[in-house]
Image 1 (cartoon, helix red, strand yellow):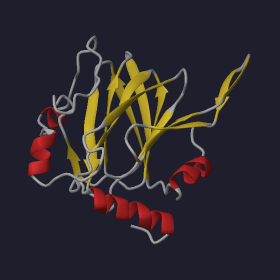
Image 2 (tube, rainbow, N blue to C red):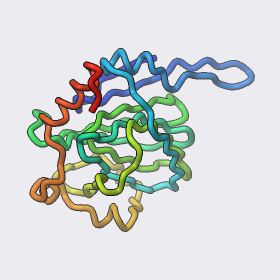
Image 3 (cartoon, rainbow, N blue to C red):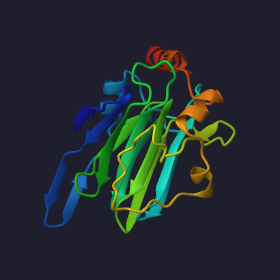
Image 4 (spheres, rainbow, N blue to C red):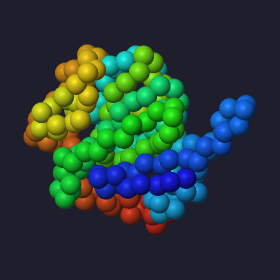
Length: 203
């Protein structure tokens, strides 16, 4: 398993070794021990999600209140998506910085993002299936979104794919509007939450 730190602190990509023979392919797309070594704490999975998207489906940018937040380990089982992580932690040295990773059924790469970071993806193929391992269950009362098309974020969406958004995502606030409304997580609160996980004292 190859591990790479993304431009956004608290986010990594994981590329598995694939074993091929005449029967097909075998790989380990998630290794708890590898992730724990990177994070300094285990990922306790409390929910697993699966989405099926048509080409152009743009989901996000989504994030949750911290604490407890919602860390995610994201993997594309079919097709291809452009997966984007955004630092939304107010006070972070990299506030507003994003990074993008292609997740597909070729390299079979996965992305981990810590609680407090924003997440979005765009389906690049006729069908794209994405599985998420989540540290916390979905709670609509603490789940938020930002406009994935906000010029201030300048996310690297390909120009040859027409984005298709849900009504909720299409009406999501810009980064500046969300910050002014006090919706964004605070960097110091997020760092304290990460420290509690590493010391085993929970959220």
